[in-house]
Image (tube, rainbow, N blue to C red):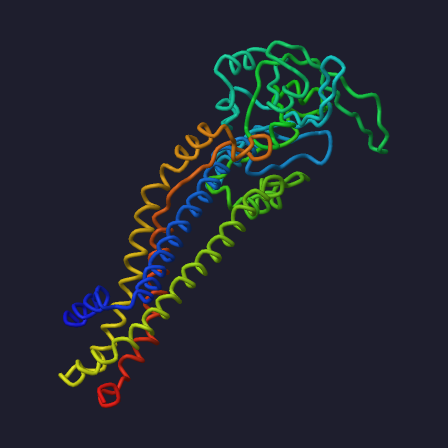
Amino acid sequence: MKLAWQLARRFRHAKTQNRFISFISLSSTFGIGLGCFVLIILLSVMNGFERELTHRILSVVAHGELYSVDSTGIENLDAQLYRLNDDPRVESVVPYTELTGMLQFKGELKAVSLTGIDVNNDPSAFKQQVSEDSWRAFQGNKDGVLVGKGIANKLGISKGDAVQALIPVTHADLRFSAPTTVTLIVAGVISVGGELDNHIGVMHLAKASSAAGLTGKAMGLRFRLYDPFSAYSTMRDIGYSYPQAVYMSDWTRTQGHLYKDIQLVRTVVYIALVLVIAVACFNIVSSLVMAVKEKQASIAILKTMGASDSLIRQTFMLQGALNGLVGMSVGVGLAVIIAPNLSAIVKSVETALGISLLSGDIYFIDFLPSQLHWADVGVTIVVALTLSVLATLYPAHKAAKISPAESLH
């Protein structure tokens, strides 16, 4: 193996080598490096989006919900909270009441989804999405409300304004009555990101339950799970065994499209860039085939000196694998350095050029996130080296089959 390594290095750096072969060899190295670099960078961006989805959206949106099918609300609320909090899959469960209606301010209307929460015992991240002053103002005023940033911008609402929430009233025979009007005082503006900011609102649980006409304390229960990605199965397991008739829901119904989009893009990116690396490896095949043709005399001389077919095969396999190793090392090295700092780099470019790559009004974040996973780096290295070695098999086999008699006549 040591002799094969020395021969591979000599053949690769031979000064007499055809310039065209050198160019093809260099292009294969560059292509593999570029493919590895872009693959790791884009996978890191997808990881960043998934992290932000988990930390931002899923910190505010309930992982799962159970809510009453009628106006009685949740029966035996305290007993059910005690029982469900003992479930090992459940991190926390809290009561809530949700109202859907219109928010009115100075003659302007905007659709809103108001969630009534127990402000003293709700572990969701609503508190982290507003300033401390706004949260204290909301917590200390039973008529307080936090409105989404999009709603505030649309209606021109600011802290301290009085707004009216128009809540529709329906009857068992599907008749509508005049809407219930609830006066609320804006305590602050909440910003979660994306479409949620255009319809989210938070108010006190008792006020929301009263406006909904519930006979119980809350319309439903909001769940936070230790594993939010098991929400679909967990909520159905809990819901089917619940002693009261309830509807079941989980975050995959309302926000699941974001996660599915991220996974789809990740898959497409991975397939596309692995194919880019594979195409670059075809250049290894081309360069080695031409190198074998050019080195026929040298191979024949080595064979007459006693070199075995396996030695010749190993030599050209190592020569081709070196191209892949060099390209992979450079590409992966640059990606490992840049990926953790990608957000800051992109932010600097946006500031310098005066542009914005992501709009907070459309996406749930307004910056490009990045999170490097070493598993992605490992898979990329294995894929690049495997394809590089496979690309050398045919040229190395052709080199080993060269006949000294025919090449030296």
